[in-house]
Length: 617
Image 1 (tube, one colour):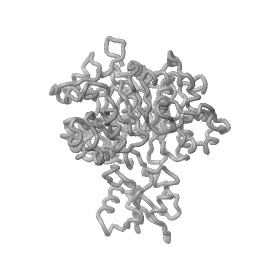
Image 2 (cartoon, one colour):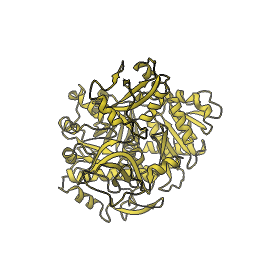
Image 3 (cartoon, rainbow, N blue to C red):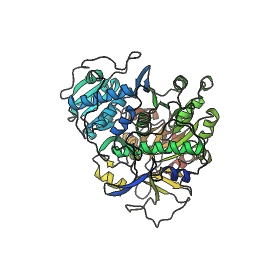
Image 4 (spheres, rainbow, N blue to C red):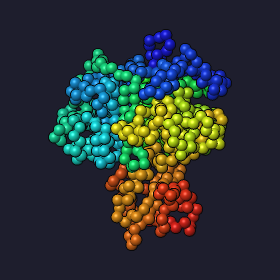
């Protein structure tokens, strides 16, 4: 990103500020005025005039160059390893050469990553995008058939995996004709060792697929290495994150460099505006480095776009967790002087409820942000009680919006704890009737804080569509507008309230569970005549997965049997934790769609609804 009239990188710098008393509108107008860092302009994207950040990075490669400015400052901390920004850049540049020269990866080729949060995940991401190839982050908890689908659908030429994912993928390699190389990362690293052994081939490879250990592929990292040459346009593809729709088959959201860079700039803007309005420091209370406890998966846009890319470009430190554990999180917050953490509301609640909270110094925390699941309105008040300096933030975004669309923070959040906040300035929102057939919102349609309908989103952060899915793309994207499927309303100040999720997505501890996928698995059981999967409120995870079952005449099936049936077909987080067995048909509309709101009402009214909780429910 460059400031007007300069050529050097400019990012918001750590500082303490006094609140200036500006309203939301006044602060926005001040920061986006002509000549300011957050000035906006209109450009044409795929034939549609779109408002964009004028000085956003033109590509992720440019964002990577920003990270280079922080030299010997720590960037990544993981299980005793510490990698500086300079070391990270050299590894990225070296791997970029290896991908291009040794593995034959070219601009536009897809490179998948299927592993837990490890430093190599981040290095592989930047090396891939820096040469114009496309990163395909795959859910590390997917089963072998799901991983096979992601690799096949994306046409990945190379995949980075950890040991567990390698064992999961090997049996299906022979069916992946486009995959040429599998690079394996070993989690069993010694203390202080940044590159694990072994150095040689991992095992006899599957015919047609070369297996290589990450250290062997990386090789020697020259001190003076530079990135290989690459020409990257802002609207070139950069990522494919998999989401899902009503068909039950995952769809790849094809995101561009502009999408990711726009999200980066939006987060810089939100931090700067919050600092000006509320006096919140962008870094630690002493003005030092911002430190984020990364406990959410990098294979989601929150972990990748909202956290990893932002901290790389702004000089922050990422303290990476193998998996979330509240006691270990508290240890890391105290030891690393973590300034920011979050992810999904359940993680924050687990930390607050931990018996170890009182034994740890958490005074360094000044920012707690979350999204991806419904947040109890009282959570913001609990945060203020246990983290007096901590400013809570709750936002809304989708895979299709490259993370951030709205954000509610500071006193605004205390004032409106059930809202996800107003949209970022480059984003347009509209409330549209669910039966509306137009390509753009109707300007004559009824407006106002009481109008409820489907939320449509437009802006430079909206992905270009679904990978090789023209029909699905045409249904969800029209004239730059994304039809989110979420039911919402917008109040007189522009604050968004999510009323319901029309796409039947259950958000369990930050993981998206798609009802159609679980229903499809349940229908494969010979004893199931009909079923509906619904979300159940959970104080710990936000939601749990519930299933209402109508059995075939004479069938005798237990809840445990159905859970085991789903477990071998889908990821663990997809498995229902509660079953109801129903002796009458499910409520449906004339088109045959299950009326899930009505079904929930029947289930939670009590006895007499015709449904009986199953054993193990």
